[in-house]
Length: 226
Figure 1: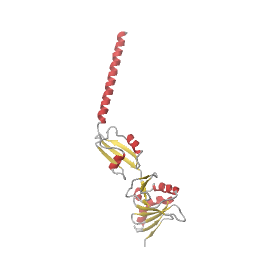
Figure 2 (figure 1 turned 90 degrees about the vertical axis):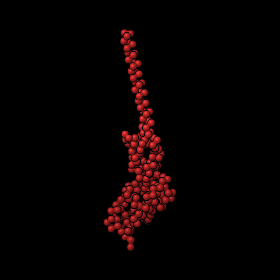
Figure 3 (figure 1 turned 135 degrees about the horizontal axis):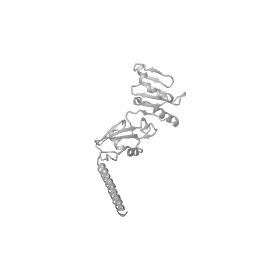
Figure 4 (figure 1 turned 90 degrees about the horizontal axis):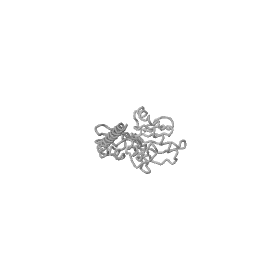
């Protein structure tokens, strides 16, 4: 009986040694991998921020550890970012990282404080040169919120075609706006019909690209300039 007990003890010691050795090897491998730095970043789908600005926002550089750079860590960082909504990282075996960025849409620039208004209604100290400018203040807070909500549904290419926005309520409708377009045309529209501006290019094409005023607030007709 005594001999059998000694064999079991030796077996346990051997198992512990093997276990410790495996752990040591794994720790060593992790330590070595942690020394590897990111070779190159490829940035995708950023419209407003430059590649460098994206990396700065995410606190990434070529000094970053390839092993420990991960989407979870970056999402924790972008909670403080004003313009980046989401990010996905994909690593390659050649120490490269592909960064897929989702930015908040910039709807327009508030002329009163020169801040960009985002799809979530927040204002940031960032001016996008191609964004439309809201020239005057919308005093009614509820109307302003409704306006932002509808502007979120305007296609990006149409947003880029608007140069200025004026709040122009009248005796009939307090939710009326005038859009000045980059091509020299003007569009009157109410909040309830605002998404009809997504048909702007098609409508202007049907009137042979003449210059004038498109009324989308009451009806759908175009009055050319004389």
